[in-house]
Amino acid sequence: MAGSGSGFPRNTQPYLRCAQDKMEEACGVFGIYAPGQDLPRIATYALYALQHRGQESAGIAISNGETIYLKKGAGLVSEVFSNNKDLEDIPALSALGHVRYSTTGSGCLENAQPLLIRYRQGALAVAHNGNLVNGGELRDRLEKEGSIFQTTTDSELVTHLIARYGYHDLESSLKAVLPELQGAYSFVFLTEDSLVGVRDPFGMRPLSLGIWNDFYVLASETCAFDTIGAETIRDINPGEMVIINKEGIRSTQVLPSPRFALCIFEFIYFARPDSNIQGKNIHLIRKELGRQLAREQPADADIVTGVPDSSLAAASGYAEEMGLPYEMGLIKNRYIGRTFIQPKQEIRSLGVQLKLNPVKKLVEGKRVVIVDDSIVRGTTSKKLIDMLFKAGAKEVHLRISSSPVISPCYYGIDISTHEELIAYKRMIEEIRREVGATTLGYLSRQGMLDSLGMSEESLCLACFSGKYPI
Ligand code: SF4
Image 1 (cartoon, rainbow, N blue to C red):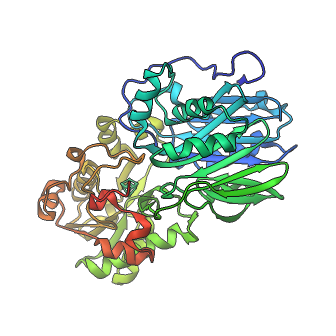
Image 2: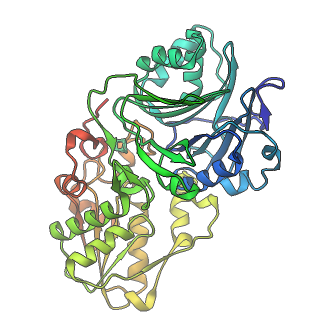
Image 3: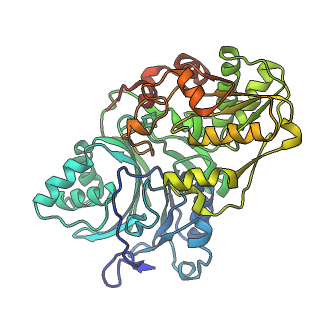
């Protein structure tokens, strides 16, 4: 644990070199302002709820009003915070939490968040979800001007910009810094006396506001509120900044919002089914995606099964609409360690058979529909279909509750190049052959929009359309 008031306020974890982050992470952030409450415990519980958004590292920063303390490390929340004794005695005012998913390598510990710095105005901790598309440019400029970076995160970049503007309060500094940032971001900042949440002008990454025992909380997803017993108030608006401190909460439209461009993948895959985004429940949306998929891509089959866990809702919707039995044809081993969610391609494909296993007696001799939420590289689909045939399935009909992914994401999701994508420059029939399915059907783009009840202008669909909102 490092404290901003005692010596140099840096994370005291050993330095590990981060070889090459092609992209930033898709992460989970949490913040709470609740003087005198057991914030280490509350923040830890919230991070447990957000664990699906990142398993590589976890961290919590706590302010007692004068000093910010930081504890972070590589691994799951349960590993990093297995013992919170060092945080327990802090008379906490506010807390900031983060879980991180990185795109390359396993270490990169210096990139773990929250990031804690000390500058002329005091201590500042920051947690970020998203990716700045002009991060490289800004970094180049700052390096030419003499800045030295210890991490490859956008968060550090932003702290440098904040420090350079040198305003007395964070709000004024952010008003100067935010217009320089382009890309997807939901930031939560912690100063000694305030908690500040900001969402980018396109609202690409989610950020919600809740209330817990009269105290305000911020989180990437509302499932974190449910876990700690908080009520959801609303989503933070695109371009909005909220400042929470002893005076209560204050909201400023800090940047104009040209349009809404929330990442559609939050609905399809990312968010937890019990979360609500834009007032829409993720489970019900996925079920509707499955229903719509059945209307567009029916299959002559005996049973429907889904790829656990993110595709189960879509599979049940598909089965309901088709009038077919919905079965648990694939069983997930929930006790596989982090090794198999590491983002390296070779490990990813090795891990499939350890993570998932077909129920032989169920699929034997049957025509099986397998519903998945998306196909990115295709390696997992290929292995799953192979497994189902080996388990005795007569036919395997692959149905995807989203459209073909044809373009990379530059906004913080781990899809880095066109070449990685199986649907890039391939016809559906070629993809079907490649993955070995009897038939293959994707949901149309309009079908996705209809299921969400949202227009193309209110979402980012760039990885399906190649049209980037920023
Ligand atoms: S490009 Fe795709 S994954 Fe990236 S933000 Fe847009 S919709 Fe989400």
